[in-house]
Structures are given as structure tokens and as C-alpha cells.
Image (tube, rainbow, N blue to C red):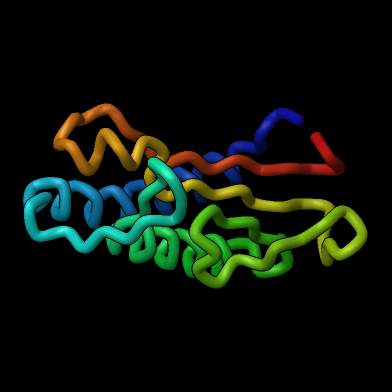
Length: 118
């Protein structure tokens, strides 16, 4: 499914807002609070803050769309049968958390839009 320009505009604005939080926290990495999700799998307060902002902004822009978020911050875990909409935002607020934690500037905000299982 090709993204429509309206969705691209939404994503650009959402990522710009979220990136400000990430950049600020990346500059103060020694102060970050980190939790362990599993072996070698970490989540930071930054992941949680950024995910919350992304979800809030996406829900404002497209209130009917489903949300599936990695950290579970307000996103609904939806199966194919539970979807309210044919569209689902899939969010990883900091894709590359390990790099982020180690001060390596190779990480990204990842957001996908699922439409009819595509």
C-alpha cells in the first residue's frame, strides 16, 4: 500500500516532535532510567515518553486507526479479528535502544502503517 501524502505529512510532524525528546535525552545519556524487558532487551524512560507522544499525536490526527506499540504505552494490542479499523499504526519509538544507551548515534523512530494486512 503506498502511503498517501497526508499520512506522510502526519508522520513527519509526529517524528519531528518526538525527535526533540530523543535528542535532548541522548545528550544526557548518563541520567537515563533503564529497565530490562528480557535478556539483552532494554527499555528507557525515553522510549516510554516518546511512544506516548507518538500515540497521542497519531490518535489526534487519525482517531479511528488502531495502534500497536512496542512498549505498550497506550497502544492496543490488536489481532486481525479485534481491529476497529482496517488501518493500524505500528510503532517502535526508539529502534536501536541498545545503540541509544551506549551513546552510538545509530537509532531511529520506526512507524509503519498496516492496511488490510499489508
